Image (cartoon, rainbow, N blue to C red; front, side):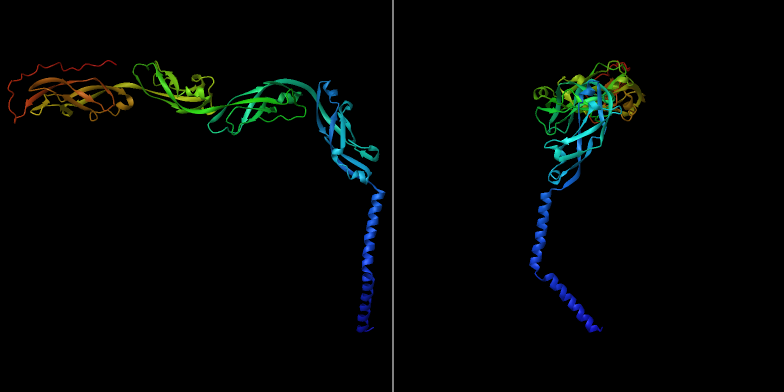
Amino acid sequence: MNQESREERKQNIMEFWKQVLFHNLSTKLLSIAGAILVWVLIVNIDDPYRTKSLIVHVETINEDALHSEKKVYEVVEGSVATVKVSGKRSIIDNLASDDIRATADLSELSSVNAVAIRVGLKKGNTSDVTLECNQVLKVSLEDMEAQQFRVTVETTGTPADGYSVGECSVKPSLIEVTGGSSVIDRIATVRVSLNVNGASQDFVKRLEPVAYDKRGNRVVSSTLSFSDGTIRVRAKLLQNKTIPVKVQIKGKPEKGYELIDAQCFPEEIEIAGTEKLLSGISQLVIPVDVTGFTSSSPGLDQEVYVMDYLDGDVVVKEEYQKVSVQIALEMLLRKKIQLRTTRIQMNNVQDKYIAAIYGNVSDIELTVRGRESKLKNLTDTTIMAYVDCSGLKEGVYTLPVKVDTNGLGRLVKGAKVRVIITRRIDTAPDTVPVPSATPEPEEGTEEED
């Protein structure tokens, strides 16, 4: 067979299949659609039998059987069950997990604390549906225990600017918690959480109590129950105010010591209260008695509780509950200074006179009393010494030496010097001669401490 014959045969075959497929095409398509429709009708009329699985939550019943024996339970296994549902497709397709009820009767617990899970439809005729569940519910049993706990309030959030949370009262303040003995033993506190975010006035809320262990972790157990499901909480909002803190010194330190400074840290605290209450508080004064104190007394640095000095209705933030009081005392010492007489100035000498030290006195001794820290800076060069010659005429005088220590101490034993006052050469003599003054005692008088 040559090449041309093969090509002709192939073309004939293609023409044949075109005739088969496309001849009366519309009739063929209608036939296929009719067949599909007939199949659907047959299936729906016949309503075939089918099976599907649904996940259902298991409900425990007859719990009183355990409570009467002072027992509580916790589900270990079987809280959900897989249920096979069989029946006509028209029914099965419309069933969901919510249509099935799975129960475990705790009054039928076996010796191994297990009970079969029974299933059934919540509504409708069960004769048309078959339900199958081969699972069991297992529980752990424990002795029931009840204990009373005081309810405390834990606040969350931040009140409006300028406000603080005051007293939060709860009702009831004491509730009974029931549960397994091991769970009750874990409970340290029972609290309610109150959100105060943005609050600026008093308000009331009802909140659910929650049990916590000593580490602050929530205690969760299906055995737990509270005598009151909700707690009524009334929150009081207070205005804030910042006031200065000052120390009020009472008494005198030990002889020979001087108070240098008294400070509080922080210097300001923030308090809260009603507007009427805060209007009468402008500062916090902390009295400290330093009677008999020395620079080594233990009471110089102390922490005091702010509420000991405020009205009981005032609220103080936690960071301001205590303030530190620091008192500084320093020992008073005496220091002797040898001062050359050449450093003594002659003040207030009349223009026509000249004043000078009389005699061969080269220096004098002064005693100054003051703090140790300041006296170390006191020398003969830091002292300004002078003699007041106001109103004196020609003659010899014994005059006290006055001293300015520039705040470094206090003169307690001074000295006197003899001063001679003479007329300037270029001035006329006095019309009335002035005799020399009678010398006064040169010793200074020591001051008492």
